[in-house]
Each structure stands twice: as structure tokens, then as C-alpha cells.
Picture 1 (cartoon, rainbow, N blue to C red):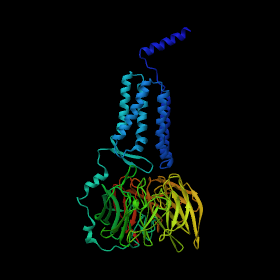
Picture 2 (picture 1 turned 180 degrees about the horizontal axis):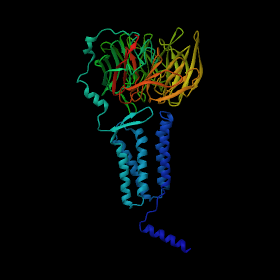
Picture 3 (picture 1 turned 120 degrees about the vertical axis):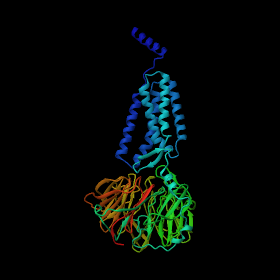
Picture 4 (picture 1 turned 90 degrees about the horizontal axis):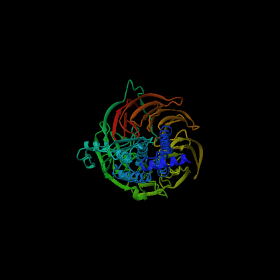
Amino acid sequence: MATAESTRATAVEGVASGERRAPRLWPALVLLVIYWIARVAVNTLAPGTFGQFLTLFYSPLLLALGLAIWWLAFSRLPWFDRVWAVGWLILGGGLALRLAHASVGVMAFVIYALPVAATAIVLWQFLAWRWPAGLARIGLVAAAVLAWGYFDLVRLEGMEGNFRTAWSWRWNPTAEEVYLATLPAKAAQPAEAAAVDSPLEATAADWPEFRGPQRDGVVRGVRIAADWQASPPKELWKKRVGPGWSSFAVVGDRAFTQEQRGEEEAVVCLALETGEPVWAHLDQARFWEAVAGAGPRATPTFHAGRIYALGASGKLNCLEAASGKRIWTRDIAVDSGAKPPMWGFASSPLVIKGVVIVIAGAGNGKSVLAYDAGTGEPKWMGGSGTQTYSSAHRWAIGERQLVLVASDAGLEAFDPASGQLAWKHDWPTGGVARIVQPHIMGAGQVLLGTGMGVGTRLLTVSVEGDDWKVAEGWTTKDLKPYYNDFVSQAGFGYGFDGEIFLCIDLSTGKRRWKKGRYGFGQVLLVADQGLLIVLSERGEVVLLQADPEKHRELAKFQAIAGKTWNHPVLARGKLLVRNGEEMACFAVATEGP
């Protein structure tokens, strides 16, 4: 009894004298350790997957919820500290979000700022709980201000394919601002390009549209010097370029691409040999989002002396290829009722059977739009998909011409002239967008690839009269292409599973090898030699032998700097590469057209 009374008296004296009870900190420390281990693990073991994205976004929210419950119910801190600190953190976080750069939106704040602020506050509490109450409170405010405030000083420059972020101080000029400062006061406009107004015609040596004449990333009828030690690619020119993920179309001595110039989207014609601008068509439009940044996503298409180009906001232009003069324009967002998707309209126009076809993704029979190639008048609409950044793909099966469209709904095939749905294979993704092109294998076979852990499926299509049959073959998760198209040679596929290059057996879908950390890059196939030209996510050009037995890297060099998602082009002995900051042209010794 005496001992209990003595203990109670000591406690009362402690409270009366202002002595602070030790807080219960271990639950918060355990939560932080679990969170940071999970974050490092998912970034290391599952880069570029849907699971990684979900973990990055939702785990900070769960961490914040767990810490809030601990703080209010189990921390043993004085109630005054529990209440005012929560209020201050919410107020400070909201104010910091309001002051943050436009690139640091709510999602970036949740993924990056929230866990940093939570960690700073818990660690401060761990260090300062023995300090005088007033000083500890001031320190907690300072820790929160420093943690939140750091993210008000920086600008998010975007993410790589594995969700790794790039940051810079918000007062530093952007690559786009540096580029705009180099442009003349008045860029070359179509009216000024009359001197070069002569017909352009595509030949077998040209690359007239996205991923080449067959949209498969294959260079045919050409042999290149494979010994880059003896005959390395020679840089002809390297220049700054505006933001955008467009590739090039090459016809004759002209190259066509798209870029962002401030508040204007630009379709640009360049002299192939020098990179000098010939003409630029400008539209008042700007699409931007935090991951990939600003600029057009689609690649211009050359057809019958005209350029067809789709901007990220939905502007579809038909221009004279020689001069850039506008022939007609449409707005696919208006025509379909679709809002620009999360990453922008990305469909490279397909011209076939007198119509130009693009994908809007509006759903309800308005996902795929066809216009008269000559006049721009709407011809038909169709399709059910809503999540797609792929482009329409031509496919000749027997004597039939079809247009394939990949989306979150699966794979649909349309008659290009009428828009009638020939067949459809349902393979819903649960909201994951399909981005890569359908891959034609011959013998009525087509591969449908999907990233974010979904995989690739083989379909076999046959027709008798008007009766189409679609048989499902193998489905593999060994190849999960996100926005990185793959190629095939002699029954084997070569491409990216996440950020690692691989080879799969196309008869079984089984992996042969997986090696080569090139990031989320792109690949070309030089078919006559079985050579692969990889453009890595970091701007390296890598030459590989297409060998199903092993990964064989022959040569590589740094071509351009910065995040590189754009498809490379090999045409007329020129290797063209670009990203959202630089573009370059290299002469490659070749044999053939």
C-alpha cells in the first residue's frame, strides 16, 4: 500500500512539475520502416508495373492514416500536442500544395511529399521528446515547413517508364524554354516555303509513317555496316527540338515530325541532310501532363503528297507535304465527344482505302473515327474501347483489307471503307491502356501485347465467306510490352518486358533469354541481316544480333541526352533519333535502296 501511494505521489509531482511522459514511438517507427522497405522493394522488383503504381500512390495514404491513428490514439502525447499538430500538418500541407509548381500536382504530392513530411515529423518527435515542450513544438513546425517547403522549390520534370522521377529547381529554365529562345522571331511558315513546293513521292527507300510502311518497325531490302568499330554511324546534325513523343516520317530529302512550341503545336518539315527547318504548321493548342510532359504524341503520316498529323489535344490536320499549306482540319475531340485522355491523343493517322483513320477512345461506337482523306468529311465511327494510345493498323488477310484497333476492350477489326465490324476478340484489361501496335505474324496470326503485368496473346483468324473465326492461342506473361513495340524474326520475338530486353519463342510464348537493361526503349529490325537497333530510354543507340540463343550486343553509342521514348527511324542511309529535347541524324553505311 505504501509503495502504491508513493508511486502515485511521484506521478502527481511529475505532472505538477511539468515533467513529460515518454511518448509511445515504436508503432510509428515500425510503420515507417514497413513503408520504406515496401517502396524500395516494389521499385526494385516490379518497375513499370501496375502494382508498382498502386503501391506508390496508395501506400503513402495508408501510411498517413496509420500515423494519424497512432498520433491521436496511441502516442501518449499531451492532447494539446495531438490536436494542434494534426491541424498544423493539414493546414501546412494544403498551403504547400497551393504554392507548389504546376507540375507538382496532388498525385505527386501524395507520392513524394507526404511520406517525406511524415518521416520528418516522426523522426523529429523521436529526437526531441525530451526537450522542453515549447522548443519541441517549434522544431516540429520547422520540420514540417522544411519537408513541405522543399517541394515548393522544385519542378517535376516527368517520370521514366519505371516511375523514377526527375526534379529540378523551379527557377531553372525548362528545356522547352531554352529551345524557344533559339527559334527565330518568326519561324518558317507554309507561305514562305513556296520555293520548295514540288511534289513528293514515297519510294521503297522511305519511311512514310509511324514504324514504317507496314507499321511493324522493320527495315526491308537494306543491309547496313554491322562493324561499328570500323564504320561507325557518323553524326550529320544534332539540334534542339520542342517537347513531344512523335517519331519521324521520311520521304525523299524531307523529314516530318511534331513538337510543342509554347502554346502552339507544330508540325515540322526538316531538310534530311541538315536538319534545317523547311516549313512549320502551327496550331493554338497545348497538351501537358506531369508524367510525359507537353507536346504531340503521334507521328505524321505521308500519303499521296500530303501530311496527316494528329495533335495531343485532338487537332487533325491534312497539309501539303511540300509546302505545309493546310488543306483541311478536324477536331476529333469535338467530332467524337471524347475528352483528351490522360496522356493525350496519340494515334498516328492511318490512310487506307481513301479514308484517314484515327482513334479517339470515346467508346459507345465513337472510339475509331474515319474521315475522307481528300476532304476531311466524316465517313464512319465505331469501336468500343476507351483506354488506348495505340494507332490503327492495316492488315491484309487473304484478299481482305482490315483495320485493327487495340484497346482496353481487346482487339477489333473493321472494314476500312464502311467501318463495319468484321470481328472482335474480347480481352478486357480492367482499365489498363493498350499502347503497342498489334503484331502481324502471317498465316492469319496476330499478337496482342499489353503492359502493366497483363501480357501477350496469340490469336489465329480465319474467314469463310463473311464468317470470321478468331481462335485464342497461347497467352504469356513473359512479354508484357508497355509502350515499347516489339519485332519478330524467324519465329522469335524481340522487345521489352518492362525495362529489360528479351527474346521469346513465338510458337510457344516462352522466354528464350532476358538481358539488356536499356530502360523503356524502342527497337527496329534490319530484316535482311537479322540486326536489331535499340534506342534506349537514356538516348543510347545499341546494335544487337537477333539471336534466339543469347543476347548479343555488337556496339552502342550515346546518340542524344535525356529521357527517350520516341521510335527511331532508319531510311535512306540515315538513322534519325529524337526525344523531347534533342534530335539527331546519323549517316549509316548501307547497301540497298
